[in-house]
Structures are given as C-alpha cells and as structure tokens.
Length: 491
Image 1 (cartoon, rainbow, N blue to C red):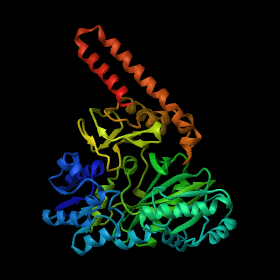
Image 2: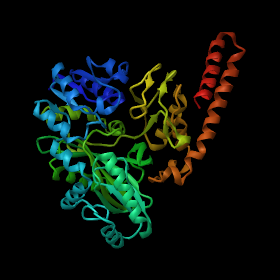
Image 3: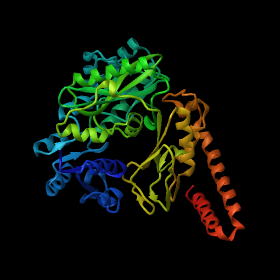
C-alpha cells in the first residue's frame, strides 16, 4: 500500500480523496493555486504545495509543477480526481516516467477513449452498440451530406476530442449543414486544439444512463450498476440517481455485461464509467470516462462500496475481492450538484464570498463539500459548492429527503441553484421518473424557480415573525431577518 498520495485537484473531490486516504492510513499532499491558498483541501491535507497562479493553465494543468510537488513531498502515488488532468494521457505518462503510480487507468486506455472516433471503432469491434453515424471523421460538407442522407436528419456533429457537449451542433436540414460544420469545427479547434468532427444520428428525447465499472490488474472486471444522469444543462449533468427509474433487472444485467465487455476489450484497469444513450428501448454507447465521476456517491450509497478506496487498492496492486453477484442494490440515492450559479440567467457562474453557510443533515443525507463560511469562490474554476446526496429505502423516500435537505441548506453571499433543484424535486414528471436530456426545457422547470424563491422568503418571514415577540429568541429573529435581507441582496 502507498505511504503518501498527492491529490492533483481541488475542492470537494480533493477532500473526498483525502478522506479515503486517511481511513486507509495514507498521508496526503495537496496542491493549490494562489486563489486557493485558504481553500479547505489545502488545509485538510497533511502537507500542501503552492503550484502557481490562479488560471488553471498555470496551476492545476501545470504537469511540471504538480510532479515537482510530488517529488518534493516524497509522494509515491498521484490521484487526479476528475477534470483538469484526470484524462490527460501525457500526465499519466509523466507519472509513469517518474516512477510515481497514477491512481487510474493506463495512458493507453486514457488515450484510446479520449478520441470519440477511436472509442466508437473500439466499441463496434467489441460488439457494443453505437449510435448510427459516420465511420470516422467527416472531412467536408459533401461527405457530411452523404452520411446525413444515409442515417437521416436530424443529425449531430461532435468533436472527436471533445466532452461536456462543447462544440456539439444539432443539424435538422441540409441547408443548415455547412454552417453548422464551420461553427462546430471552430469551437473544437479553440477548445481542444483539434478540429476533427464526426457525425451521429440525433436522438430527440434520450436518457443518459451510465454504468460504473471496476477492473483490477488480475483479470477481474465487474460493474456496480447504473446511474441515471439525464437532467442536464448545456449537456452537463445537474442531478443523478441510482438506480435508474427505467432500468429493469434484465436490462441491468444485459447492459452491465456490455459495459464489462467494453472495459475488458481495451484491457482497462481501475475505476471507469461506460456511458450510454437510451432511446426507444435501445442502449447505445456514448463514451467512456476513464476516471472517477462526480456522481460516484450515489453508487457508493446504494452498493456500500467505497469506490475511491477501491481505486487506491487496485493501483497498489491489490485484487478486487468482490464478485459480480456480491454487488447488490440497497435503496435509492439522488445527488444534486449545488453550484454557485444563477439558474434564471442561463446558469451563469456566480463567484464570490460565502457569508453564511449551513449544510443539511439528518437521516439519509450526505454532503461532499470543499467550502466553508467566509470562503471566496474563485472565478477561475467550476463553481461547484458541494454535492448533496439523499438516500432512501425507495425512490419516493429519497426524493422526500432531498426536498427536506434542500430547504435546510443555507448559503448566502452568492447565488446558487438550490431553488432550481427544489423545482425539479416537486415536478410531477420527475416524480414519475419520466426523464430525458431535454427535461429542463420540456417541463419548463426554470419557470417554477421564482415561485420556489418566493415561498422560501415567505417561510423565513413567518419564522422571524413567530420569534419577534419572544425576548428569549429575539436574537434568532434578528438573524433570520438579516438572512432574508442578505438573500435579497444576493438575488
């Protein structure tokens, strides 16, 4: 087992990995930018190293600075978390060349799955269904027209090197095609330094369902059930749950076997996620994320398996002790990503100082967070504040607990998407499990957010009034009134 692990990340995921290390008796090393000098992850670790200026390119994407910190600290392994360098094969190779264990898959697997075109080809050879589309790159408008005519409109153009929906363009007619190609190519070149595009059939109301896999270096690969990740904005997930409301036991077994087959075909090791699009009864391979996922807690909560610890054990050369039949489902879990963003302004990031912070608790509630009261959310990184996870014996109980926890969550000084999450939880379509990647638009969720915000304000006013005449709790009334005023200012 490792003696010291450097976590090449920040925020809640850095703290999450460090907690797992601490439980395993492993010392931890944090890296931080100048903007994160007082961040929780930098304080939580056993030791911490400044690696550069706030922009990611000068800090959390600076391979040389991170590995210099690893060398100075004597770390014998690096955990990348997710984002930043987590799926960068150059970083994996750099760790390997220094004799530092990368807690994740091989550079070959990362590189292979990093190209969406190569990933599609791999899955086709492995016998995993893919969405109908081009065989490889579409080089010009004429070739794109031929593919579109073969598979039928609407189609979607995607960047081979892309992710998170960046550069995706939906094309509904031949007249739109050439302009869409120019636009998608330009975005891809700017975002990824690679303008290569491919084309797929656009599925109108799909669900996004993924399978968590684990694979050790001894030939064992298994899946840890599925997660539903259909509620998204700009192709980025906001709410995830396990199990999926639409997946039956038969489907779970069948598609889980496809996920395992995909991982085995590329000789994958460590934790990874095989993502599928589900439409009209069919599952199609979307991509493979060669890292830990943001939404891993819902799988942990419903299986009892600590995925981060498994990652560390596998990287240390240990085998997976579980068999596939040992992986069970216990209840239902939902995760809401709590972000500093304004849902009424196209989810625009809202960095700033958190003036009050009180997280919820009680039965079935888990919080993964990297902030505290007084912390300033920097403008340079993803504005995630925390992940709020609610577990229940059934989906209905998990939803009820999430609703209750969201009403308990107090964050002031910055706008958050908590009212959005509350609006989703009370939506009847969500309660029925009728989900798709178009859920927010289809069910006009954002129109419900102002109503939720007004209800919150009225509830807090009533609470303040109830306390106002009681001298013993006058201080509480004053605090509540201050909170209401602060919410108005931050809104």
